Amino acid sequence: MPIWGYDGAVPGPIIRGRKGGTIRVRFRNELDQPTSIHWHGIRIENSMDGVAGLTQPAVEPGDTFDYVFTVPDAGTYWYHAHNRSWEQVERGLYGALIVDEAEPAFAPAQDVTLVLDDWRVSPSGRIDEGFGDMGDWSHGGRLGNWLTINGATRPDIPLAAGRTSRVRLINAANARILELDLESLGATVVAYDGQPLAAPEALAYNPFLLGPGQRMDLLVTPGAPGTLALIEMSGDPFAFGQFVVTPADDQEAEAPALLPNLLPEPDLANAVEFDLDMAGGMMGRMTGAIVDGRYLEGEELFASRQVWAFNGVAGLSPEPFFGVERGTSVILNVTNDTAFPHAMHVHGHHFRIVARSDSEIDHRPWRDTFLIGPTQTTRIAFVADNPGKWLFHCHMLEHQAAGMKTWFEVT
Ligand SMILES: [Cu+2]
Image (cartoon, rainbow, N blue to C red; front, side, top):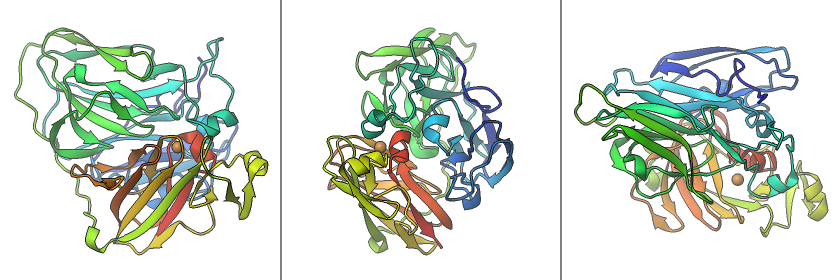
């Protein structure tokens, strides 16, 4: 199937670095439209964040751009197009970015990276060309009909029996929240969105929701040779890949926790709070929004293609949602006043989820993307310690394109 790919392949090459090291990518745009690359989850220098129109001009066809940045945290990250991402990512412009620990806590039998994607394929076996469909944009985004793992359909993934392997899952889909049956793998979780947990944890629920942009790292220790299916549970459950477990000659001791990255803890007692109201979409209550400085409603709003808004504003406004000085602890109270779930991504920072709809959360892993259901409120906290202009948006790429984005500034 014809795709757009970094180095011509989907996913693009795994870019691998070491914690504290420098990544250098000379990017040449051979598309016939402008583009840029975002390094998702990296607490990166602002000028390298790759958000066309906010942190850099889009790279024009035929032009090059050198991305050079430090990777402060070990873990599982990814990179993808960040201009017309609703088309460019859907056509295949994404890949894994893996940062290894400076001194690994353990050596897994295998270190497996699985980039999961949900494609909309036409009956002719091509990418469905219905990009920009307002039905998708105003509902749940462009949902597909074909799942792939590392660009392959129902692949076999070899694993060794009796030994512990690390499996990194990345959801690169435009809009699909994957509902994964991970219980049957007997897996434990060691990291979310790149950041290690203090200790390996059993899965709290099944199926496990992995939203667009989110990652999770698993430790899998298959007991015996055989097969372990990777199952998607939404609708009628089906396997979209399987681990093929083969005997290993030796056994090994239980894997220890990963080494933590060092992130600053938000000071909740002295944090500055901001409220974000998410509105719009079909079956929502939003009647109008500010688009490019003008209040629009009804058919005029729909014709603008900006049908979602944060605090009444669709798309990026000249003024930031908030601005704080570097080092400020920030709490965001995000309320989803729409009829759809969303996957909210903060650029340049990881945060902790401290409460959901008035329930305090005790378990607070670092994340860079969180799922929020209809009518839910989610309270997140982080130290705004990375100077620059940072996007905060829905990672359902059609929602982002249709207004679900804002930005904040750290000075
Ligand atoms: Cu959304």
